[in-house]
Image 1 (tube, rainbow, N blue to C red):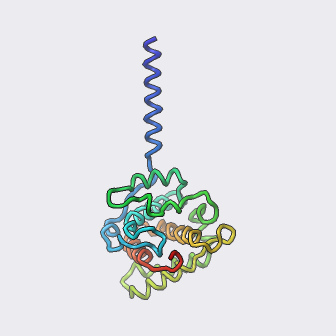
Image 2 (image 1 turned 90 degrees about the horizontal axis):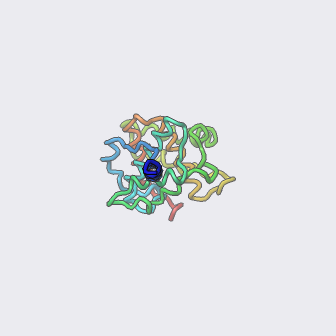
Image 3 (image 1 turned 180 degrees about the vertical axis):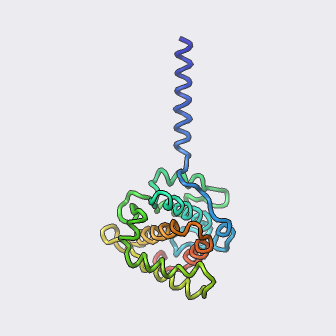
Length: 210
């Protein structure tokens, strides 16, 4: 009788520990290049996508981690449960991450939210290629203002898919960020490009979200 009771307790504890781990585990390898972490682009609202400009630092950390995962798996966005676990881990005393608006970037709602890297390249077509081309010089010591302006213009040219919310600001942002995560996945080791591109796009001003 005692053995049965002990076995029951052990099994119950194992289930409890397992449920606790599954509720808090983040599937992303959360890390960020030191150059990006220390850059001046820790403030910015990404064209009004973020609810607060103080969210920019943690958002860039999240984007880079999505890019790292996309580099390894070809997948872009997390589902809502996976994302909640990761945002909980990113939460800190300086920024209430759940109030940043990052939750809009989840898979499962169709359109660009369910894109893989290959989908982004194929279905965004010329607009994806223009973003890649016009943001490319940001990895070198070119003329910052002119290059950043071209990068932002290509960014704004990416719109939502007509069959999934069309030109709505949220759907357009989901498509733009799917393209950016895809580009990040291909340039994951180019810290200068990541830093400069995130700085350029993070500090932009857009009328769409006003």
